[in-house]
Image (cartoon, rainbow over all chains, first blue to last red; front, side, top):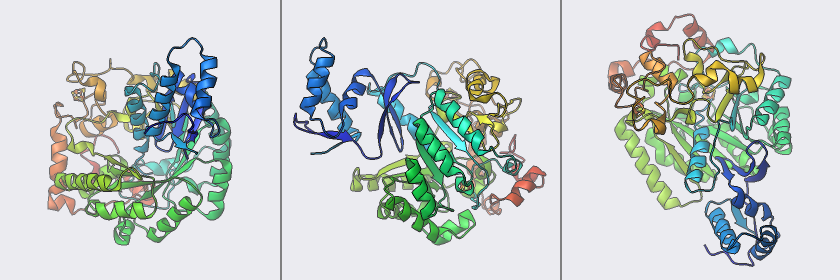
Amino acid sequence: MSVQQTDIYAIALHHRFQWEEAQNCYVILFPEGMVKLNGGAGEVLNQVDGKRTVADIVTILKAKFSDVPDLENDIVGMVELALEKAWLRQVN
Amino acid sequence: MTQASLGQSVVQKEIQAQNNGVAANITHTQPLWLLAEVTYRCPLHCAFCYNPTDYDKHTQNELSTEQWIQALRDARKLGALQLGISGGEPLLRDDIEDIVIEAKKLGYYSNLITSGVGLTEKRIQAFKDGGLDHIQLSMHDITEEINNFITNTKTFELKKKVAAMIKNHGYPMVLNVVIHRYNIGHMRQILEMAEALGADYIELANTQYYGWSLVNRSQLMPTKEQIDEAEKITNEFREKQGSKMKVFFVVPDYFSDRPKKCMNGWGEVFMIVTANGDVLPCHSARVLPNMEFPNVRDKGLAYAWNDSPAFNKYRGDSWMKEPCRTCPEKEKDLAGCRCQAFMLIGDAEGADPVCSLSPNHHVITKAIEDSRNPVIAAQPIIFRNDKNSKAIIAGEMDDRVKEFHALP
Ligand code: SF4
Ligand code: SF4
């Protein structure tokens, strides 16, 4: 699965992505379970909204976390993982 | 209720995710999964039901709508995320709509676990509008004959209709099929039926022996050969069918040599509130001796989870005895199920006898032998119903339950 800069993704059907105060992290909830996302993974999925392209997300997160090196690879890697896990669906 | 091993898979998912580094670690216990067993009343009479055999005692004092809503709020504050609404048959209550709306407001991912009896267009529309996230339908078998025999009712046509209704309302189709001697020979047809119904997920849950299924153990238990064959068919089906439908096969613990990590550990991630408000770490915990379980009517859920002696009793591993205490594998299974240990060997702190290292493992071997003994296996099935529950409470069936150390 190769993720392109122009791809647009949304959270998969029957999945819900939300911030969890009690866990202090983002989670994905779906019929058979839940996954807690660590900080970086949560930040990436939080930008996925069915409108932004991967390039948009990279720009936004680079601005937000300007001190993190090699952010782009991390972001693409996270999107790939999320796709593989079927947490995301491609919109375009 | 159907065997809610869906909850088990929740945790397995989470652990898998932890293994690949995505999830944060759980550093302290938290009731991530709240199971609301809103009623023990049920129109079906399943032979494998794992509600307590004395459920008849708990059908008169159900929590009110307001009490359920309060419980939902309190559990959410403790970190609960997944809500299972189960029973008995939850649809026998007419306030499930209100519970669903509140769950949505609070940010739960809510699951209705139902036999489908009582689900109408009007109700499912209300659930959809109220924000119910998904519905898990229990299907017993594809053949009408077996379905009606094992549930002791005539519900097969209805199940097909309900499955279509769920699908039409845009819900993911999650099927749960409890596997036992009477349907294990139909595995391929069951999977094909699930595919035809458009199931997104099917859980093939081998019967675990609690409640009524323990009473009927010799009648329900399939042979090892049948289980192996069923698993083989399941694997073939998975390969052929790809990832369109997820198939989850719950291996029966009696036939493995290590016990299951029951509820992912006592008081670790699961909290059950029963129809009458008892708060339990697992479905059958009330069989355990010298334990007083908290009730939401008294001190509330935060006390129950954090401070009650019952929830703390089997946390960690300091309560363990040999061979578990020094066992290198103890983190994997935490010595298995406390209820199974007590019911089968009379020692709630002993190793789950399913474990081949348990000095009491012979009770499992004997149970398997008994199930192959034509005389014992030919005893009539005791279906779950009010009359039989009353009879068990009154001690009229002592002969059938005499080998168990507590009323299952
Ligand atoms: S009788 Fe059947 S449907 Fe009713 S609660 Fe028990 S297992 Fe579920
Ligand atoms: S001896 Fe106890 S801890 Fe070790 S595997 Fe068996 S049940 Fe688990």
